[in-house]
Image (cartoon, rainbow over all chains, first blue to last red; front, top):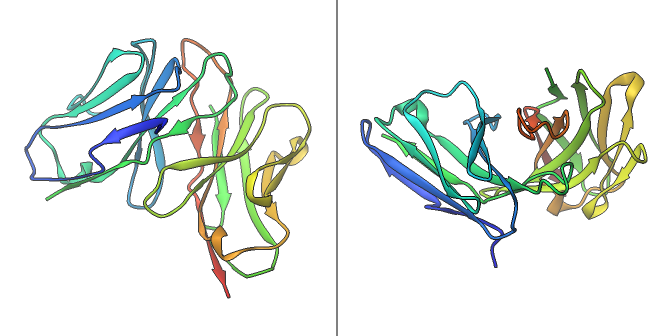
Length: 114
Length: 117
């Protein structure tokens, strides 16, 4: 009955590889997000989608490509991984019917690039 | 543009003592403010939120926060710390749901709370 689920929880990969992180929410929310948390715990928004439409695209290298096949899923694909991509990536969702209800977060994907 | 500053990256308190975490915000419109808690190796959980109703907001686990417009602050308090309060706490601000810009939450840098027995 997990509300926002991310897979995998841990991902260790070599520089130059391509990897994907998947996110699914069963809350019926309309908007989904990707946030990056660096080693100093700083959280920064990367993307948001509303009903499969890209709404926010912060200054993120174009090696990062989000994809939303439907409003319950938002995946993140990363090409040519670099050491600096190592971080925890959080997926989140929010309900348009309750704009100030805040986000529901997934438990995160810890990406380590070696 | 919205921004959040959390004073003190680490706070150490004794069990049973007052917990006070400071948050100041900057926003071009009346803000919506949030406090989230992150336990080790977990996602963020909403503690409480201010959405222009009462300025004193009560949340889960005995936490509360007070919105002070004149000070642009939204400090988080708990009268008596418990060992289980040891975690990272994040203050966040949103300028509201603007479809074109999305419902963007901007987070402060976080404050780690250590609770001593």
